[in-house]
Length: 394
Image (cartoon, rainbow, N blue to C red; front, side):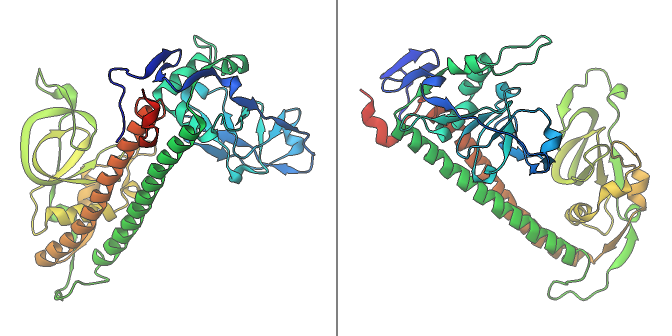
């Protein structure tokens, strides 16, 4: 089991917060060495630089450039395995660990690289630490600036920055534990991607009548959407009755409510901006001015309309050159290939089952991400301990 430190038994207060008694609080420079191997670019040779994204989102590769175009810019060989910072955005957690994918790449002086001292500091552990809330606070301390001056990570400030230093085996164990969560998250994300591709294939076949479900032979009809459904929308907030308040619409959009309550199955689609993400809802809802909603269905099932809307590229029907926008007129004039009701119901059932599988995986993914976030902010800072290190507590 994981051990909490709710009453602080076996913990001490340090410059970096409460940490276990067997951990140390040390200046960054006592466990990391700067590793900057300078490079003299050759004019005709092409080089690729790295960049570091904020919010712990990792490394990106810049387009190739010639040595001549680098001019007098100071550049350095990338060191795979090194902890690297973007000094301008370090306070936004622009920190990463270089991998073998960066071997042969270069970095400017804005990306200092550090190697942990043998058996003292794991780059993987400290990357995790700087991704925590506490780590972000420390990077902000080491990045003076603001009020018209860019916050920039200072080498001297980083050198003396207090950081927690667990025993090296515990650093490794913590990094491996969270790597397991990362792997599980990546596996789930891949499964979801594959399931979505399967669903997309089913939609292409079943909603075009290219593939018919067993037992269905009656012909499909081409009809205008305006002949099988109506489109509604809420009022602009300026025209609402006094006392109405802003709420989150069903689609997670900030909007304002009308004074009319609707009920039943409907399909929502955005009027401006996000118009390519229709969603289905069954229940009571307030009309909102940022969304269209379908109603008064005639010989068509709302759930079938939902899948039909998913297959339409709505941006092709946008009436604006800037922010994508739809109008009722455009929607109602569109033609659709519609099967008889029973076949609609069967198709909707198949596609709903596919959605159910995806939603189950997405719930599991959200749970894993929450678990990882909890472990990141508590395990890495020593708030909770791994079972094999329980005996370190008094």
